[in-house]
Amino acid sequence: MASHDRKTPLWHPTLWPAWVAVFLFRQICRLPWKLQTAIGSALGWFACHVLRIRRNIVNVNLKLCFPDIPHTQRRALAADHYRSMGIGLFETGITWWAPDHQLPPYEIIGREHLQAAKAKGKGVLLLTAHFTTLEICGRMFSREFTMGGLFREPDNRVIARQMRRGRIDKLRPAIPMDDLRALIRALKDGHIIWYAPDQSKKSKLSAILPFFGVPALTNTATSRLAAMTGAAVVPFFGIRKTDGTYQLNILPELENFPSGDDRADATRINALMEEHIRKSPDQYFWVHRRFKRRGDEFPNVYRR
Image (cartoon, rainbow, N blue to C red; front, side, top):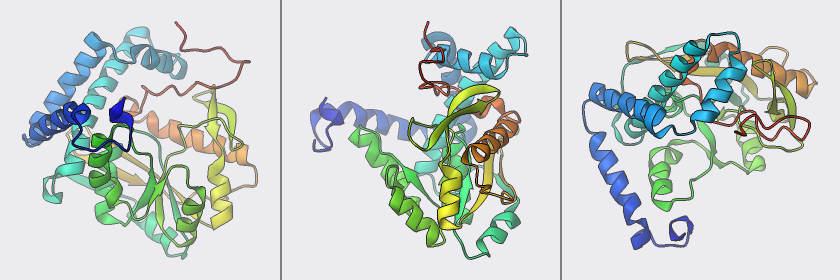
């Protein structure tokens, strides 16, 4: 399709539907924030119960990760997750287009942990996971600290343009997802780099390790990056609270990391992520196929 061709001019007719969608969405994002969150919640309900977008993936993930809770409770958690996804859509809008003074209230807990890590004169891997609050908490964090990160542009050039202006241009530095040398150089130069290793692809730097007690393809590169660059690994988790405010939690630098055992380090990171996912389970990205590409020795849990 022409919309997926990066040489296609932005004004090409095949891209007009995307321009219209962006225009309409941007107008909706001018509404009061409480109204936007209400619309987002309603869209999430519609996506869950009517469109059923990726509903089987969400159901499988929740059943695997929370096998001990009743079925009715998992259904309610799935519905809450879709509402959180809907709100996250509008959080992306306010993140990309709103001035700082229009951001919702937030607090940062543990600021001193990041300052202590930076005081060592090395880079910082800001270790996190993929939550629905990813965009807005990243914007809030970047108001307080200069932060770089990895990025992958979407195929649609119109959406890529909006992402570049709204997110990528705010990263200092912005590093292409597959540019390992640039990532290492940024850490050696002392930058803070947002890093979420919970969505892995099969490679030499991956292994099948437990996530919520279930074998999952897991990125083992975090300890390698820390060893190669001397960077501190500082966990960071941002959540949306029930009162509509946000809490950005910066934890102490991981001690005795790396340990010299990449698999043990990655297992430790998975356990840390589990701990914080359990605190706000509806806000994690359950629409992602977390248990795919595990090899022939494991069943395809998403097959119907």
